[in-house]
Length: 352
Image 1 (cartoon, rainbow, N blue to C red):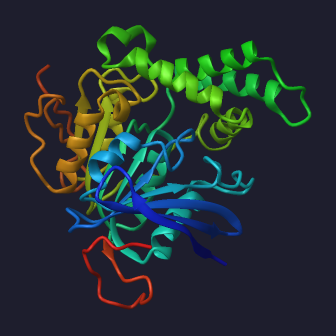
Image 2: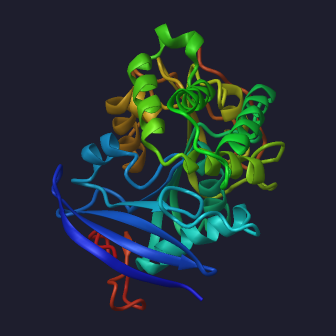
Image 3: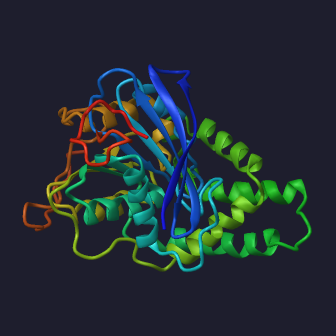
């Protein structure tokens, strides 16, 4: 049984857009989504954004301020993330994928773009693979087919630490211990050895550390549980690849959590995809190079050329039509009105 309900609707303060909040349910599990609706004509189909485990529906403020005036955006907070219900024991990647698609069904959005970052990338990938008729474009950020041994070892060490410190019934840890836990997550996500080469690296590290300290302490345990159940020592992408969906795979050139060659491996499974490296960027590319990131996403969603962008390497096309991989590296809403599911699709960005 599924359900959805409108919780709030108001004007969005930073762009010519309106904001709506919706509560959803999938297989009895509560979660939510947030929608920004441009008041003018949208430039493209609505964009569904699926973030990582530590990214809730308010984690993309820089992007939304730049896009919301001309692009409908749906931020979904799936089970196990943010204030949504904890991930049920039996949930799989496929369940999370269908929960994401259910959000678009509840909003009467028939065709859409989808973007997945970090741990949200395997879900976005599955959305496009399972629903190519509804997916106009796919963007994957920091995607990997499998965690590298280094990252896997760091996550396992963090999982053991968080399980020992934050399980229910364990006495609350002191501030110094909690600060150390937050620092370990920052070191997992940030390439500290390349800080001098990454735009705003120190600022982003401080911001991430501060945000982690402000999170409820159980959030770190949820972060570890999510990785333990769905990510560690697992293949993150289903076999068979993707055909028939225009796709962009983006990785920061200094990303250690999802290294460039792993992003290339993902791109090679998507027929006709484009792979780009963002220069002077790490895993949190959408914050480190916020203006350039927003420009790139706007270009891709409107089918503008991606060649010779000053902030990216030249495009790489790693999967030929028919699925044959090649290694070429560069030199260096649609929506139906909510009250009428059978109405003809429109492109006015009206969602929810």
